[in-house]
Length: 235
Image (cartoon, rainbow, N blue to C red; front, side, top):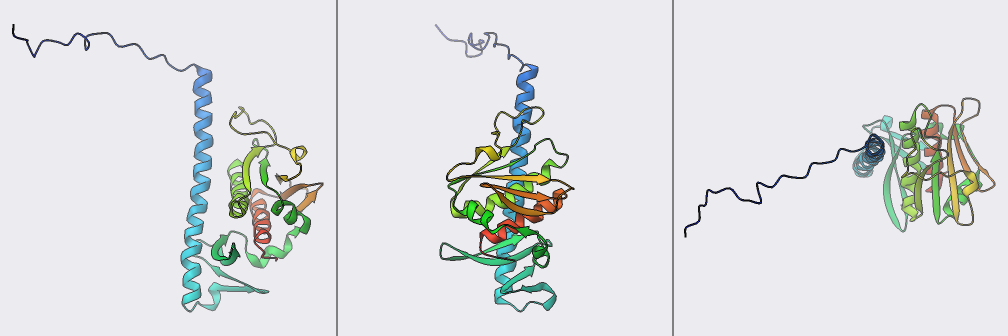
């Protein structure tokens, strides 16, 4: 008996199970997770690009003659004004000389006060939480300030975790809630704060490092000031 190759396959004719649509709650949860992942991805991309600029122009600056307007010398430190208006320099870590770029103009670094014990508090930690209020108006710049510090702590193999000081609205289940009270031996909390009633500064309050700025932009500058000091650039 011959088989008709054109005959419809019985399995193909079976009705396919209908896909159950996500509930409003599940859909909202998925969207929140996707948004958070996008924010983190953008932050990582920004700093990857920054490192590329620092590496290229920093090496070029050491090999070629730079115009005096592109080279900035502050104390014993030399910086190069990069094409993206950041400031590149070199630093030593683990016996290696590496390039890095900062948003903070090194000529303005001395205007930001820093408690030296805050640097020791971070460098002595095995784990660091960088936390901020997720409900502030300029959340994106808060994330930038957080990433500016995290890129430095990662160089020292300090486990660094992003956190919030309170629940976001709506809540983000993937982000831990950490405040200064979460600090303990070998665990340091770095709290980022925007407050127009305070000076831009970095201080150590009973083992909690508080980085403050009058605006979100000045907070990024304060984060860079801390970052500079973490790698030994004391301005």
